[in-house]
Amino acid sequence: MIQDKFSSMLDTATSGFEVTGPQTLVVNLGVGLALSLAMRWHFQTFGSTFSNRREFSRNFPLIMLTTILVISVVKSSLALSLGLVGALSIVRFRTPIKEPEELGYLFLTIGLGLGLGANLPQLTVVAGFVILTTMALVNWKSRDRHGKSVFLSIEWAHDERQKPLDELAEIIGAHASSNDLRRIDKSDQHLDATFYVDLEGIGKLSDLLAHLQTGCPGASVTVIDQNRMPSV
Picture 1 (cartoon, rainbow, N blue to C red):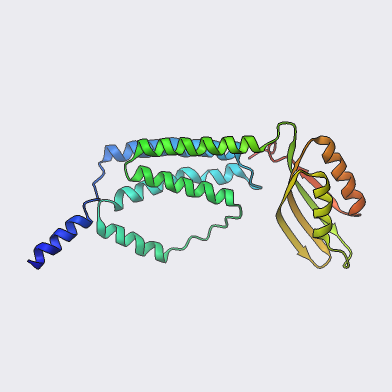
Picture 2 (cartoon, one colour):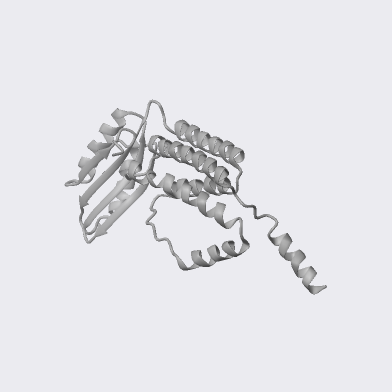
C-alpha cells in the first residue's frame, strides 16, 4: 500500500519530464542560434550602454545555447534537476554587470533559452519577436529626431569649497531636456563624471559647452555620440 502510494507520487512528480530526442534538440539549438544572433544585432543597434556592445553581445549565443542544452538534459530526470539546483548553489557568477540594460538582455537570453529547452519553439519565437519589437519601438520613440543624445565626460579639478556635482547638475539641467549620471570618480579635489544627456539640437550642445567652460574653469570635457560610436 505504502509502496504503491510512493510510486504514484513519484510518477506524478516526474510526469512533466520528457526525453528530448537528438533531432528536436538540434532544431531547438538552430532556433536558439537564430534568436541569439537577432538579439546581438538588436543590442548593437538599439542599446544605449556605455560599453563595447559588440564585445558584450558575443556572449548571447553561448548563454542561450548552453541554457537550451542544460534544460533539455535536466528535464528528462528529476535527479538531474535536483543536482542542477545543488550545483548552482555552489557555483557563483560574479560577472560585473554595471548597466541595467545589459542585465535585461542577459535575462531575456536566458528566458528564451529556457523556452526552447522546454521544447516550446513557437511560443518562444513569438515572445522573443514581441519583446524585441517593443524594445525597438520604445527606444526609437525616446529618441527625438531633431535632438541629440550624447555622453558627456567631464574631468574637473575643483576648489575644495565647491560642490561639483550640484554645479554640474545645475549647468547641464539648464541646457538639456534630460540627463542621467552614469559614472562618477571622486578623489580629493578631482572629479571625473559621465552624464548621458538629451539635447534638442546641436545649438544646445554648443551653449552647454560654453557654459561649462565659464562655470567650471579648467574642466576638460569630452563629448561622445553613442549612436554614432563604433561598436568594435
